[in-house]
Image 1 (cartoon, helix red, strand yellow):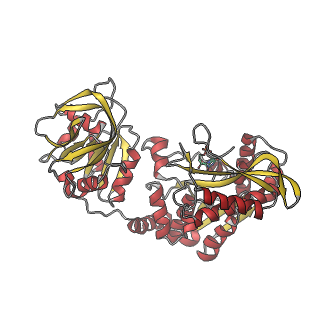
Image 2 (cartoon, protein in one colour; image 1 turned 30 degrees about the vertical axis):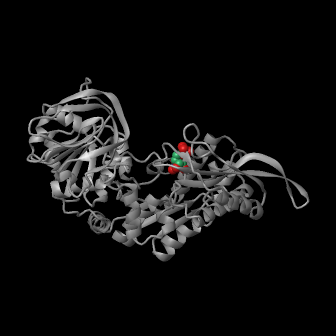
Image 3 (cartoon, protein in one colour; image 1 turned 135 degrees about the vertical axis):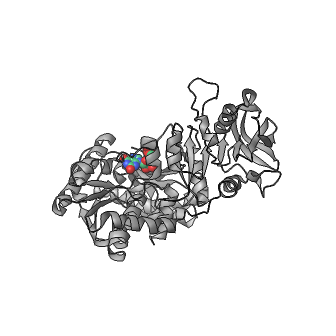
Amino acid sequence: MQNQKVLVLDFGGQYNQLIARRIREQHVYCDLLPSDMSIQKIKEYDPIGIVFTGGPNSVYDEGSPMVDSGIFSLGIPILGICYGCQMMAHLLGGSVEKAENSEYGKADIEYLPSPLFSAMPKKAVGWMSHTDRITALPEGFKKMASSPDCPYAAFGDEKRKLYGVQFHPEVQHTENGAMILRNFVYDICGAAGDWTMSGFVASKVEELREKIGKRKVLCAMSGGVDSAVAATLLHKAVGGALTCVFVDHGLLRKYEADEVMSVFKDKMGMNLIKVDDGPVFLEKLKGVTDPEKKRKIIGEQFIRSFEKVSKKIGAVDFLVQGTIYPDVIESGKGKSAVIKSHHNVGGLPSVIDFKEIIEPLRDLFKDEVRAVGFELGLPKTVVMRQPFPGPGLGIRIMGEVTEEKLETLRDSDYILREEIARAGLDESIWQYFTVITSSKTVGVQGDFRTYENVVAIRAVTSLDAMTADWARIPYDVLQTISNRIVNEVKHVNRIVYDITSKPPATIEWE
Ligand code: XMP
């Protein structure tokens, strides 16, 4: 584990994970932990600096989360953000009041000289989102910035290294926000900048090697980024002690199963077993049209397919899970992660004879997992792969799943992906795929009437898949996609574009 750590105490604000990510982008390790952490635990954690996040409460509300005031005497630099800065002012004897006008959105901030704002312009835009505001500073503090609606947009006590900002340096709309966090962690906390992905790989490989030795490890590979990176790390650490199992349920996208085999088995020399159970899944899905039934059948068969090989492999010491840091934060607010609810692997522990779960990526955010993937030499197609649901194409074909529809879906989806990449949109769109609707419509091709499938294009922008907006793909790109699909793919004569956000729709159609 890292020597230097910043502790981000979570008061429940919407940008909390973002604060932690932004600090790590400065090459400084940090953890986001619950705000009720005791002083004793904080001392044991031994951070070089502490950040209080924003949160939905008002310091005057009963039961609002508060730190133990002893934290201000630990001699550790602290940065309070939004609610965090109000709480700091409140606990140290300043006053916080409900403002007449809530301040929400961009505000012009005037910065005064301060170590927090060194090398910054005197005026810049900051992102505000608050109703309460500080009206009097605690003793020893001085004003460090203001905005039209906020007399103390920032303040601090340089001697005690305590600082507060009412705006959000972690959001992109705050100009120079990254610089503020950088000033805090480097100039005020004295960080050395030792958190790098190459450093992570080196120390994790060493740690895994020591822990595992020659004992047996089993990993379920889905082709997704997390399991791919986890498996590659383990392969680097323990080589032949690792066995990976890849269940091909026949519901993957075009060329995807081949790519998994070529990258991991052929190029990297992993001990990778592929279970080719596509026909078994199709048989089970025969005549089934209800989305939930389809999901259940696919999930259950996945476990059965895995069970077949795991029986042959026999008992193992470790089972690998691709848990990443946001899962850890969400599933236990810092406590140990429950096994991912992702239905495809959720049931695996029940059919595998193993002693311990191993989660090599549990300290990493998704962008860090990707950086580790590149560090390990994985290709862009694997590392930048868009999220893909466990039940695969099975939930992108409305109604019964058949081999013919799967082929139509794979071919149309492949064209969409090619054209999105050609237009340079592949990194700005969160997910993009085609769907076979359950509708057939009349068309005319050559001189003939056709009666064929309607294919829908689904493309969304999103930050975390919890909410999403439909992507504004330029008309000319849509035109090329549409022309190519109806001309090159069999059994399609109409293309529609899904223009619904989530909510009320979901990203997937089923
Ligand atoms: P929805 O359709 O609920 O999807 O808006 C949100 C995100 O989750 C993915 N998704 C799944 N991922 N197993 C998964 O691993 C599933 O059963 C599943 N269903 C949806 C979806 O692709 C999107 O990224």
